[in-house]
Length: 92
Image (cartoon, rainbow, N blue to C red; front, side, top):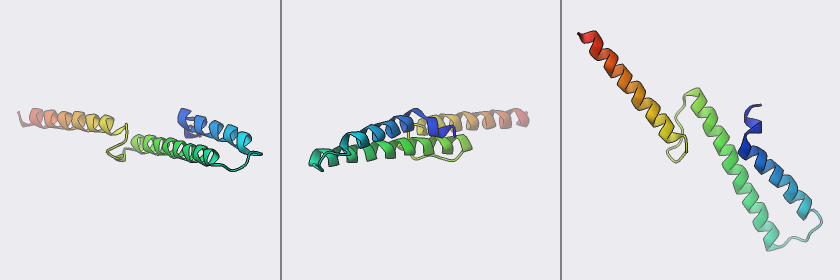
């Protein structure tokens, strides 16, 4: 339920509702098709962001092009450094 109210998803859904209201009685033109295609792309990006947030929360690797990828890489480097430091301390 938390992901349903994410900002991107909420904006995409509300934009879709207003687009539906605006094009309900209008004829189908290339502009209307372009608007719907744009909305579909926006919705896909919002859903992708929600999927990435959920994967990151569960500890699963996200795609390299995700905005969360650098955060995960930094977290992994920090964890590796901590393990290395702990291993070095136990050798003494």
